[in-house]
Image 1 (cartoon, helix red, strand yellow):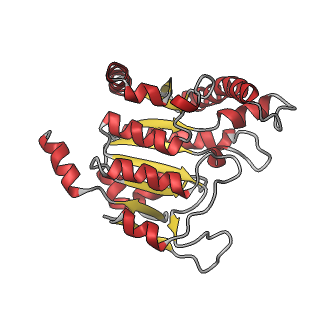
Image 2 (cartoon, one colour; image 1 turned 180 degrees about the vertical axis):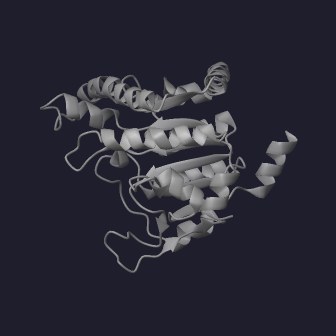
Length: 275
């Protein structure tokens, strides 16, 4: 299916917003983007969609708030910065969604939460309850306490784990590129957009995977990892440019370019049959 068909056929959608989408060129949080995005989410909810948001940006928000910490690489400073920034990030999301007349809730998770059966059950129940009451959960990794042992490391994979746990119909990763290209489109003008990916193993053989970007912790590699996680569970994934105006609306009407990773049909069949 095309990105448009995939998006419109989904009811339960997990949307991941990357740091580069949230940050302006000067490194501060883009409040105008957040307010427009919240209005788009409200429009989707009014049409019967159910949404969970996975939002990066805690450290970006922290750097916007506390001057002089940008070059402090010590783990304690980074974790403290995330704690400061998470408050600012959620405050701005709450204000943005309040204008759209939608309540939001915060869930901070670590790798350990997804590996403990009791915790995953509680997380799943909380997500279902919030969404059923028209509250949009906003999820981020708990960077303030996570150590290497319990660190997921990027929100691409966190959003994939969230989509699987919630039994979503679709995962949308918003980044600063239009989708998967055969090469880096910022350095190679001949790079071509891959609009549909049916076989991820074949894709990895045919493209060049670069490094991470300026603000984010993940590059194309983590986005492909996320696609592998969801498609194996019967959940398709769309990778699109979240920085473009009305990105959600344009995915729905088919005017925005994107890459769709199709779901594994066998996995989807087993998921429907409960086996």
